[in-house]
Length: 182
Image (tube, one colour):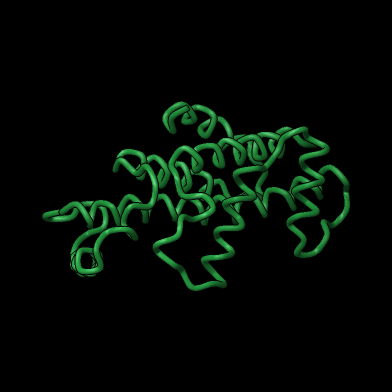
């Protein structure tokens, strides 16, 4: 499955989501993931580039425009692709957490458990018969970004474009359930 194959579903959901859900975030996820896809992101390759090339690329990114670099070179393009992929992951995790809370409140007519993503995820999986395998991996990775130093030599929990698209597919299923909930 490619990111383009999900375009119509994103368009459909934008008009059907409840007001409590930020539609702009859903569009932002799609646009970031699509941009990473078009920049040929496959998996994190930037962190594995030589230190000098990474530093040079970052310097050029600071001087250049993110969307239209003046004279991109390979390490800079790897960084740009990873930037858009990671932006999509961060937004996906945030929207999934919000979506689960709103869906729980709509279905159960009560306030969701405070700060307990895992209870909400299990509730969703058992009540909607949809697993959140890749979104859970994305959430784990995002929390590691927030709390642990990064070791660029180690592969991350979720770093491939294919996994990112699968996580987005799970998010779209969650958002679709939210759009249908009364």
